[in-house]
Amino acid sequence: MPDKPPISGSDAGEQTTPMPPAGSVAAPTDDASSADEPQRSTGEMLGEFKLLRRLGKGGMAEVWLAEQTSLHRNVALKLLRHELTVDETYIKRFETEAKAAAGLNHPNIVQVYVVGADRGQHFIAQEYVQGQTLRTLLRKKGPLEVPLALHLIRQVAAALQAASERGIVHRDIKPENIMITKKGEAKVADFGLAQLTLSNEPLHLTQEGTTMGTPLYMSPEQVNGKPLDSRSDLYSFGVTCYHMLTGRPPYQGETAVSVAVQHLQGDAEPLNTVRPDLPPPLCQLVERMMQRDPDERYQTPAAVLEDVRTLIKALKNQQPLDEINLTGESRVGRAKVTRSTGLAWWMVALAVVTIVAASAALGWLQRPGIPDQSQVSSTPAVNQLLSAREQYLQAMFLGDDEEAWLAVQAYFPDEKLWVDRAQEQLALLYLKDPRRYDDARQILEQMESRRREDESYYAKARAGMAALLAYQGNLTQARTILSASQVTFNKHLTGSWRDLVAETRRMIDESADG
Image 1 (cartoon, helix red, strand yellow):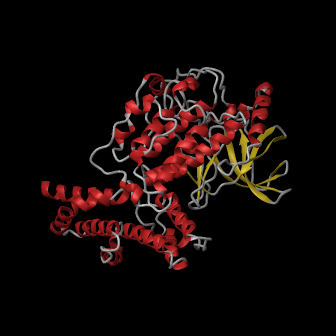
Image 2: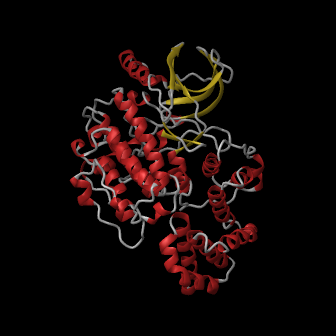
Image 3: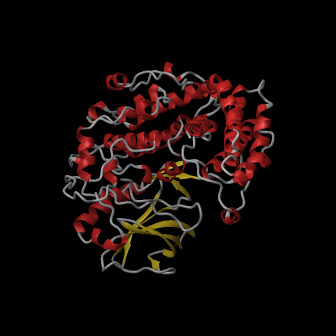
């Protein structure tokens, strides 16, 4: 069963760092709150922090947007629940470890500013991040394509490396604790907060009826209550990467016991079985992180980072990834992963100029509709950023925001690569709304006219045109395009465009069956 949704800000499209129950089995709800919990209000002061508005409430803390008055900056202020802080020995241990986490200063880590207390209320003040969690991104977009996945994996691995060098173990790596900013930067949240778990004691697995939370991502040694090091974080990160690439965690169940047993004894379905389009080296990397025996995993985040950079470099150089040998490759990884057949996944490399450019072109397996007019009117104006790349990444993370995609063209009309990619996304966006079919057709016809210039661009245009015809009831013409273009589609389409062809084919097949 999925984790409890992350805490969100009240502003549209805004989220702050999540506050799920680190290391716990059940996710407590507001009903489980202690009667002794004080009720906070806007304008109240806690130390030097002025409460501005409540952002949400989770199993461990109430989260407020607050102003740090001494520095005139906004922070995410996490007010720890009273029952977690009644044991003085326990809270001193937490404060020691949380203050150590506050010493982590890295662009891919949500910065902890202050760990303190006022009138019995323990709190953590940390960087206020506007964006969304990886969990939210996966809900909206589905499994990520290879370039974007590598883009995020590299950043999280860099964060874990920085923590490992300081001897800090996160203990709760999962999609809810990875923030994605509007510029596409990944930031790991809640270093230090996971120390509130009884990390040196066995996980209690007797609650058969509890809703699953963090155990979806726990390492086997964490389940068994054994001492933890950075390799435990790598296991949890491997499980998170599996979720990132497949759209679901490798192990699922209704109870803590059912999931914990799978972490200890089960075998996850191989990545290349779930996603035949994935390059074998990427499958090897993720599956090695997920090895049950810590000695069979990567031994350090730095080793993971080295292999991720190798794959990213190959993409940049348009090198087929099946030629890549990872430095950390193990006998386990090679034995488990076989070379994919059918889809020529390595063509992904030929479609990118930079890893960030390709990362923006992720597949949308779950395609939400265009926001209604009330939502559009509340969207803030799209400001010009420093480069076309940043403008494109902002549009990607804003999602179905027409103004954001149009801004790429308006602000950077001479940046052909980015304008073309924005046009592709606009075509996909317009195909979702019958009112915009004429706009979709206009873009697709422009794309078709450039066949000699870019065969991949032409293939996308033909896929979009087939879908448009099917949506409008012209199934015979749509079938003709699919039949005539099958070889081109297999060679050039990935992600959302391949999904579009599959959807069109399903419509045609269902009509024939009817």
